[in-house]
Image 1 (cartoon, helix red, strand yellow):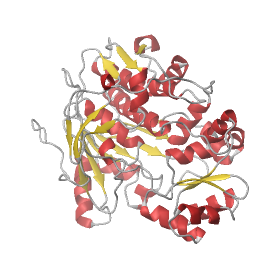
Image 2: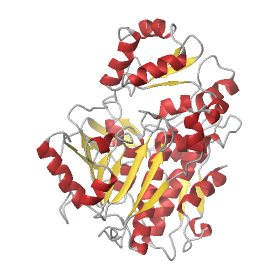
Image 3: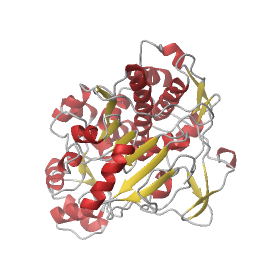
Amino acid sequence: MTKPIYDEIATAFQTDETPLDLLHLAVTGEGDLPSWFDVTGLAVASIGIAGAMLARLADPAEPPTISVDRRLVSFWFDMTLRPTGWEMPSPWDPVAGDYRAADGWIRLHTNAPHHRAAALSVLGASADRQTVAAAVADWTAVELETAVVEAGGCAAEMRGLDAWAKHSQGSAVASEPLIHWSRHAGAPPAFRVQVGKRPLTGLKVLDLTRVLAGPVGGGFLAAYGADVLRIDPADWDEPGVVPEVTLGKRCAGLDLRDSDDRATFERLLAEADVFLHGYRADALERLGYDSEAIRGFNPRIVDVALNAYGWTGPWTGRRGFDSLLQMSSGIAAHGMAMAGADRPKPLPVQALDHATGYLMAAAVLHALGESAASGKAMSARLSLARTARLLADYCQDLSGPLADETDADLDQHIEYTDWGPARRVRFPLFVAGIEHGWDHPAGNLRSSPALFRRAGHAS
């Protein structure tokens, strides 16, 4: 079913100059992730469209051919890093997970300490699963969801596909485009595509995204030469995924409430070609950096934003993560019903995050090409909820099998991360005449200065 998903996504990037038949995608490899939704099809289509936009940017008249290995991309939609002599921490906080409420199921997302504190304060529980489970059982799912969200935490009641379609937020998301595009009066970015093996060399990307979608998008751009500078506040960490999502990037730290750090951030904005951010819809605005202010610092910048629950509707400002969207949007409930299971049955991977990340990368590449052609700067907005809506249209019988990973699936290159040596799954995308590679191994957050590379310097 890959082609229908790919064709649907491709319509969001269609131009009169490049018809769909020039964006043909070849698919190699075998196997599917086991799911009642076409997760592998979504994986192939989303990274495929990012490859198509790269090919079109490199040569608009005759884009290079592209292919995606469906087996490898299935692995890339999970963790790709294979440590040697060390172990990755668990990506999940011990309290995070699905709990049975008085009338259904709810998921608590507690990976961030302040989100965990919010949930535990509402429940009046200590940080162990048995105590939390007993407390959750006294609440209805929707009442607990509301209370945790109002306390500044993250939770999602499990709803069915039909219930979500009728919900005010589900209805709002269904009417949104897959990507919201905007054109602005500013001139296009000064960056010009490089002729050679890595066409994004010299592209400056300011990355204010975290788990997981935005980092996936930034990592894709870094693979083709972009200088991706990730910015985190001093109090943020995600040890279970940092080694996975910092490949190819340099990571700096800034406090946007500090006047000196704000000045540094504004200088970086002025220098950047691309701004990736995944804050809630009003978060940057409250810090004084709404879209108008960003363009004031840099009218040429390509601004690509991610939101969890969509850009319209009553939940626009709600915190959200992939696992919560799977509960809210009906994905986990559909899997549970189809499997005849006694608890929520989510996707086998965080597919909404990964797919949206590749769509963000594709949006950057499309905007660079369109801005250069039109003479106007361009921006884009995407959401996990709208990606979930896309996937929900592609239900299927339980797919599979995907054969177990072997050594042949791994790249022979040894990546010397800040935690130790490792190998990664081979990259699944192939674009004729273009090479991929990452200038920086995975590294700790806030380990680099808040500076873009100087021309001709790799670090």
